[in-house]
Length: 113
Image (cartoon, rainbow, N blue to C red; front, top):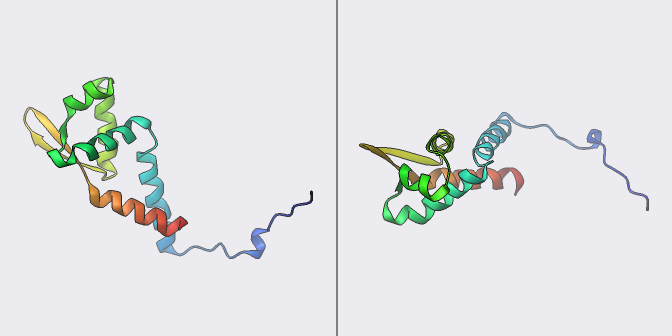
């Protein structure tokens, strides 16, 4: 069986500044989703979205992880814009950011679709 590989010399691989920015954004968002606990947190928040979000302490008991570990996962998701946090002393209510999830999907589809 004889197969050949294309050479990059035969393909225009140049990328516009907008494409490079999309690639960077997608990589940052994908990195935020690169841990199973963070994916699970997002799934839980999506499920609880109709009830108004959920509190950090609820997440800790559901995930079976240390408070500090859950807090770090929440920080990463918040930094990427996947979730929002609202202070409700003495706790914080976390909610899914559907707009950012939609943007992630559009960015992914734009690069790979």
